[in-house]
Amino acid sequence: MNGLTPKVPAVFLILLLFAGAIRATEFHVAPQGNDLNRGTKSAPFRTIQRAAELAQPGDVITVHEGVYRERVNPPRGGASGQRRIVYQAAHGADVRIKGSELIKDWARVQDPVWKVTLPNVFFDGFNPYSDLIRGDWFEPKGRPHHTGAVYLNGEWLFEAAKLQEVLNPSNEPPAWQKEAGLASTTTQLWFAEVTASNTTIWCQFKGINPNEQNVEINVRQTVFYPNKPGRNFITVRGFTIEQAATPWAPPTAEQIGLIGTHWSKGWIIENNVVRYSICSGIALGKYGDQWDNTSANSAEGYVKTLERALADGWNAQTIGHHVVRNNIISHCEQAGIVGSLGAAFSTIAGNRISDIHIRHLFTGAEMAGIKFHGAIDSVICNNHIERTCLGLWLDWMAQGTRVSCNLFHDNSRDLFVEVNHGPFVVDNNLFLSAASLLDVSEGGAFAHNLFNGTIVSASEPNRQTPYQAAHSTAIAGLSNVKGGDCRFYNNIFVGRGESSAKNGGFGLAAYDKRDLPLQTAGNVFYNGAKPYAKEAGSDCWSMIDPNLRLAQEHQRLTLKFSPGVELKQANTRLVTTALLGKAKVPGLPYENADGSALKIDTDYFGKARNPHCPNPGPFENPGPTSLVLER
Image 1: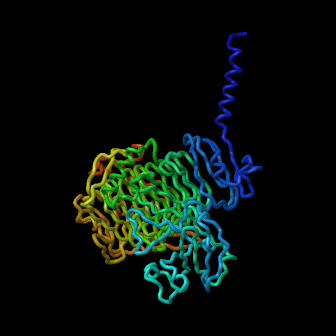
Image 2: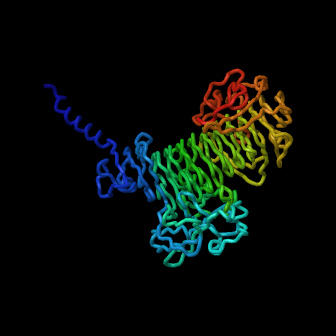
Image 3: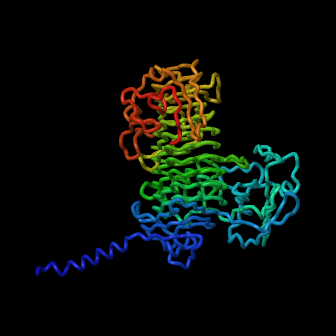
């Protein structure tokens, strides 16, 4: 026998032990379970939190059908993208995680007013009915607002400014109600009063007994959110996440949503329904510290926030790289997805976002379907955003950001790019609302988009905002925004006859007075839309109406569009890194996040473009047809 034989069993034993150490465990959670169980499929836990406490990198938590009223606080994350901790709904199961509790002890006060009194211990240390919405850039419209809410059969009711408005409703609604556009006869109001020991809620329930209905109230600030930063590589998949008392989430404070990543790296949030958040739905934002909400609403205050974040590890190695995809997000009064700095290097794809800030009870900045600060090298693609105050708002440091193949419609405005210096790329999007673009930036490249609304351009001489080194969070300098230095290639602009807006209108005439010139070619202008004054060779068909409209057909969204032969006559070329050059202020090229050359060689549907003479607009060879837009 040779001398190697005795060593083989020992090595084999070590390999077996190592394999056992990394073998994934699947924990199960079900409404009929018990947290004293083993967490197996036959003996599941009752709460998701119990499984979270035990889960280690590589483990999976499968949650079975039912309603779970808890806040999930993951105590740890995964070890890498390959060894994640996965939280998932069981296949085909309707799993709802709620920040609310069901209330049945309503007592009639007078028709239609009922009330309930709860001991403050019911709220376990956090009482949404004494928790005011407040923070930087928040405007309460002259009255207090709380993070509490009352829901009747899944729909939220409206907080009154005074108890009297609930007890003695008038035919003449209060000013806040009229401003919000709420009918006094159909709007149901609630009001809460918190004493040292009890919380009393009065609520209008018109024509019903609330004890016979599904009435819920907010009791938790969030639903799925780690209490500390650095819980990395977590996947959350397939849940309905709803009804929580989320706080206002400015870029200068900790940003908490119904679900949030809390200053971490590598989360995947996919295939969820996220809805009914007092402020934000999904939060990819920053950590909290003693300087939260102390910026004096100033650019200088946010620069200090940014400096602290850099000192606290804001870089490509530790923060961001999240994937948020294929979620349905609605009924959030601040933002569907919000993120200050923490959304860098992330992908936001395939989400359906709607009904954001539609109650109009308060206002302020930070409100949009998606609102990001510092979306460095992030990709925002294939999303459908409708019925929002503002579809997408990229504020500060949209550098290396790509906005591609998104559908916007029925928003107050589709896209706002604010105090960025580029390079960022906006391609193959459909901007179909009455207002398409507010550009208070420079260095953007816009290619193959369809603009069906007004475009406004403005400078910002009074704010010094940062630009970064290439593909990095490191600040290379600060500059104000002169405006311009944009590229517009192969876009379609559709006007609505003669119309104008402050500093803008339909088409590119809004840029005629900007200090920095544009690069333009291959654009087509219809129905009164005007080209940039210095654009050579533009195709301007001011008297032709392409009959652009959206239609709902067979439960599918269809774009009616008859462009005629004009698109074939446009003098276009393929949009590439070489064509776009470099953004003036940072001196950087338009390229992919990995530093490779950019080539816009596919259309909205992923169809290959003609490499020599691509069609203007989002569609390659569309023809006079109806295009089904839903993917």
